[in-house]
Figure 1: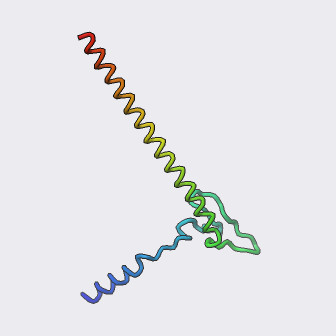
Figure 2: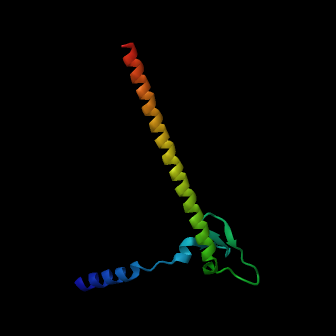
Figure 3: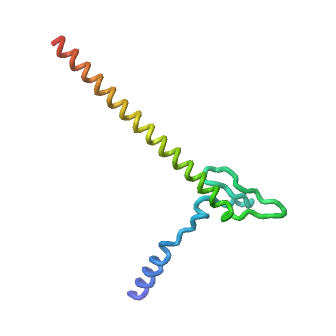
Length: 104
């Protein structure tokens, strides 16, 4: 049993660093089209040539980078909006406190 566990652990460690990057960036559908992460078609096979996903890794990485940049920008915009809302709420509370102090 100990031998099985040690060989399984060794195999797990050996395979942990294997990352098929070109296959993570795009997929090959049933008809042979190469589809990018955003759903755009990078290649459509013809009768003369098939699509190889590895040939489109750079294009897929560019699309993935653009999607990440857009997500980062959206997160920054949301953080700025949250900050502005918090500042407005603090200003409103300060005004309400001042008005209560003036009348009371």
